[in-house]
Length: 383
Image (cartoon, rainbow, N blue to C red; front, top):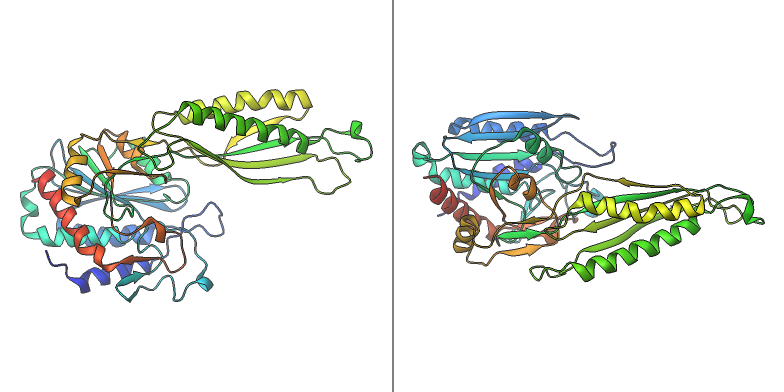
């Protein structure tokens, strides 16, 4: 099909112009409600039933449904973006710029650009949308880039219900049926400060942390020896030590130390079990050194995701995309939708390499193929 480029550009420009930064830092965090309302204003005139699900903090999800039936297709995406540094951009991040066959703007590829693609596919099917045999559901979520509160709210509500779901994260239009999970954890050690000239006056939290680091690296080695999945480029679970701070002066026994790490499990590894195993291994260190240790989740964990290679949705996506299904290392909302009973794939225009970068862009030559793929899926799964 031929996409109406002006209409697509106008829609993408409208979404980029609506800031919806999601961040764990309250001073940077924003509501996504304006984006949700704009999407609703586009879908309601096409006959979609609009439901806006309010979430704490002024955030919201959108569930827009056309048609009814026991099956159907969900097209899902998140409406938030990461924060940005405008001084590092060559243009205003909130003003769409089309230049050298690229659409530049915050969220152009991750992932506001997916929603105008959905709308263009609906434009192409406009004359036949009333003939749907199964429901078509457009879902837009909040806070994917931080807490995933939007996807968690959907899971808690047990909605939406359909047979298939496509999450339009930027994958270069390759279907993704596997990704790792993620846990972000903080280790906090309470020591007892004192004058460094006499170690007997205190309990050094940094010395305990040295043992914690060794224990975590040993745990990583054990996990990697036990778990392997050749479907991933990095085919083992990873554990990264990312942040550490302790003490306040060289001549004081360190009274407190804190370290943050992430662990990315493979499909089949349970994040709650992993958290418990780590805690069991660290507590004896604290007890032996009189330095209590607390292991705390920095974010709610995100499970690893795997859709069967022979599922009808994966096979349909491979046929339409002309690519075999692959894996990615980053986490998405896929496990939340899959747990609602839907066959799920991650697939959308743009490249993850451009996400979270200054001068984020989506190549214009991704648009028409993406629209054709969605039109094909809607036709095959809903008519």
